[in-house]
Amino acid sequence: MCDERTVTENADYLRGKKLTRRQFGAVSAGAGLSILLPRAANAQAISEMELDVTTPDGVADSYFVHPSSGTHPGVLIWPDAFGLRPAKKQMAKRLAESGYSVLVVNPYYRSQRSPIVNTTNFAEVRDIVLPLMQSLTPDIQARDAQAFISFLDNQPSVDSNRKMGTMGYCMGGPITMRTAAALPDRVGAAASFHGGGLVTDQPDSPHLLVPQMKAHYLFAIAANDDEGQPEAKDVLRDAFAEAGLPAEIEVYSGAMHGWCPPDSTVYHEAQAEKAWSRLLVLFETALA
Image (cartoon, rainbow, N blue to C red; front, side, top):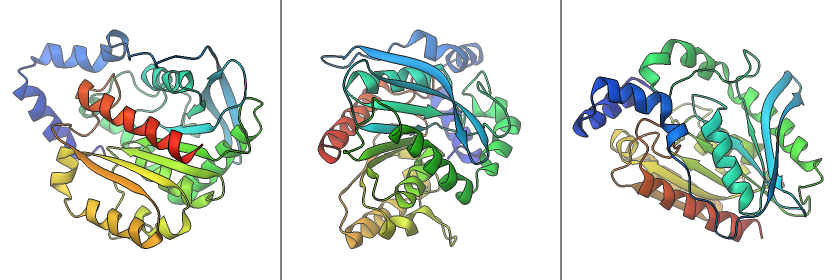
């Protein structure tokens, strides 16, 4: 998860790539505009819209995109610390082109509408983002998950006879686990990309929820996150094995925390594409 350690390590990584301070700022502010994600093979025509989803706590500004015809499995995307923004909409759109009805939400809707910040350089927006992250308690996450899954279940483009998927980045990783545990009969597949706080020593650690889940899982772990907590992957493997649930758990060599979104300062295209391909395999298998 975004914290002082990952800020320092990612800055060191960028210095190793010999980015100047000006280039670093340019990557942070503009990568999402300059990097175009590959289109899905046999991409379907899609329909997209900005909309508000009513929850028990208010109204969440969101982005919903789905194939223009037919019904499809629903997918709920939890953004990283920087919230709902063009890069996340771009990723949702790409997934919809592969045949899914996708909702990506602003998890900070209680505080403000998106966009929350205009950069993915955590050091520059730490004072804005950290309090927002800390406001999302486990109870709030589960309550929101139920509202967003309910929204998807009521959309004509969502096949309610098929299980749903959920996916999350950074802080969104543990939220997928709380989503899968809160709605085990609806969530059949889940994926965490450079998720933070998946295994902690607290009584509300997400990994303790595995016995409540029925979802098949993908954990794509950043190399520096694994270096900071090497035991976490083994705890996750043991938890899913004991629950009898399939889980693909892999450390992505050379990928720093935050490597998947195209607007990230440490975007790693080759490893991001690998993680995306594994996501598609998971959804095709578990949501069939």
